[in-house]
Image (cartoon, one colour):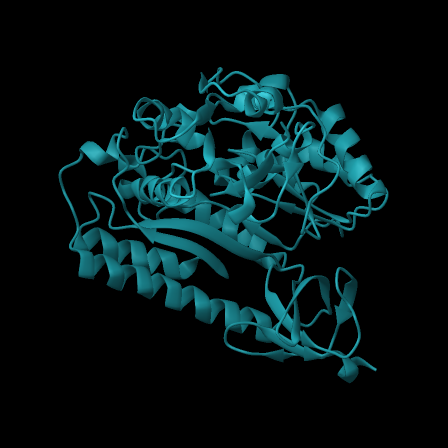
Length: 418
C-alpha cells in the first residue's frame, strides 16, 4: 500500500544532502511536506551533543502520539539507535550505508534494524533540491581526527572520498538543472582525497571549470588543510570570499587538551594571510572546556582579538557521552561560561560590522527567499542582505553597489540602483 512519507532533518549540511539522497530512492510511496498527514516519518538525525539527542527524543515522542511509524537514520542511528529500537520507540533503524533499501523497508510491515557499516561512500547523484536555491554536494564522508570532545568519527567512520569524476558529473548535472551555486559538504571536507593522492584544492580547480557554476561555497575546513593547492585558487572569481576555518580555541594548552592538530601561532599567520586577500573569516570556538582556567582564558582572549574574524559559531562546552572530554571532571561555572561566550560573539559582531562598512566592492547576491516584505540572500562574503523592491527577484543573481550597513545585516532598496 502506498504511504505518505515525511522527512525530518536535524543537524548539518551533510544531513541536508543525505536527506535529499534518501528521497531519490522513494519509488512506491509519496513524499509529503506536511508531517501531520504522514504515515511514515524518516528522521535524519544529529548526535553531536547530548542536547541533540534530547531534542531528537522529544521529537520522536511528540510524533509517536500521532500513531506514525518512525524510521531513524543519521548519526544518532549509530550512537543511540539500539536503545531506541529495543524500547520500541522507533519502527526501524536505517544505517547510512543502507539508503538504497529505504523504499522496500517502508513497504514492509515488519520492524527492522539495518545499521550497515561505516565504510560506504555515496555515489548516487542528487540532481535537484526542493526549496533550495543552491545545491549541496557531498564530497567525502568520515573523519580521521580524534578531537577529545567529538563523537562524530565513531558514528561517521574513517575519512573516505567520493571519486572526483563522480563529483564533477553531479555538478555538471546540477548546473544543467539551473543551479549556479554549489556548497561542498562532508564530515571533514579538507581531508578530501588524501588517501587517493589528490587534494581539495585540485578538486576545486576542476569544479571551477564547470560551465554555469557562478559560486562555490565550502563547509568547515581545518587550518592545516589550507595547503599550496588550495592557495592556488584563492583568487578565482567563483570561490566565495568567505572561509570557515575551525580553530576551536586560541590557546596552545587548550588545543593540546582538546587533542587538536593545529597551533595558535600558525593559525594566526594563516588568518592574517587570508584576511589580507580580502576574505571574510569564520570559525568554531568552544568556551569553558575543561582546563580553561581564568589565566588561560585571558591569554586566549588576547590571542582571539588578533584574529580578524567576521563570523563565528561559538558554543559552551557540553560533555558528550563517549568522548574523552566528558570523562574530565573539571567544569567551568555556567555564568562564567556564558560571559565568555558573549564576549567572543560581541567581538566578532563588531568585526563583521566594520568589515561590511569598509567593503568597497559591489555585493554579488543570490536571492534565496522572501520573508514579509523583504527578499533575503547572502553576498560573496556570506553576509546577509535584506532587499526592498517591487520586482520579483526570487532566485536571481543581483549586484548591488548602494546599500546600508545595519548592525545585523545589510539593507538595500533595489530602486536605488536604477
